[in-house]
Structure formats: C-alpha cells, structure tokens
Image (cartoon, rainbow, N blue to C red):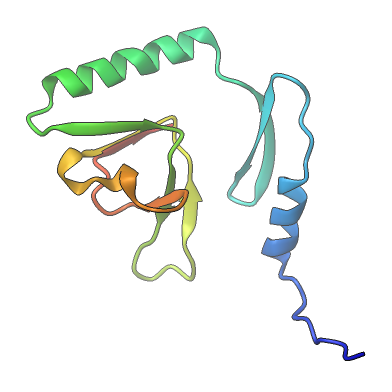
Length: 118
C-alpha cells in the first residue's frame, strides 16, 4: 500500500470547512464576512418589501435592459489584491446583454455588474 502525500490545509480552507459544516439555529443563516463568522436571522418582511421596491424601480426606469438576481454569488477581483473575495448581495443587477446569470457555476465575475445591494 502506498501513502499519498497531502498538502496541509491553509487557515482559509480550515475556516471554510468549519463554516460549511456549521448547523445554524432555525430561522437563522450564517455568513462568513471578512473572515468573521456572523449568525443572523433571515431578513424580515420590511427588508424584503424595500428590496422589492428597489427592483421594480430599477427595472422600470433603467435605460438599459437589466437582469436581476437575488443572492447571486459574485467574485470580486481587483488589481493589486492577493486573492479574490466573494460576496453574496441581496440583489444584483447587470445588463441583460451580458447574460451574466447564465454562466456555468455558482459565481459570476464582478465585471459588468451594474449594482449590488447589501
């Protein structure tokens, strides 16, 4: 039998594994924000009503045909950063012509995103 050498996990990978295995209380969600674990209740009805008004307003008044996605994963990358960061805003708007929400996978690039709300 041959043993395979395995690279040690980084602190980031250990934190991600812990986060993905976390069991949150009913009605709560866990978020990993800037390396900090935050457990919070799901958004309340007022929050969702305000979000709905924003979506309606943007879609009805934009001069560009827009797509919107709720809780879409966005990969932020910028020159000079060591690594990418990831965010999942409440709503993300992008020009329909880019078809960003039809890309494979769970994350879209931030390039082309017109507006995200948090």
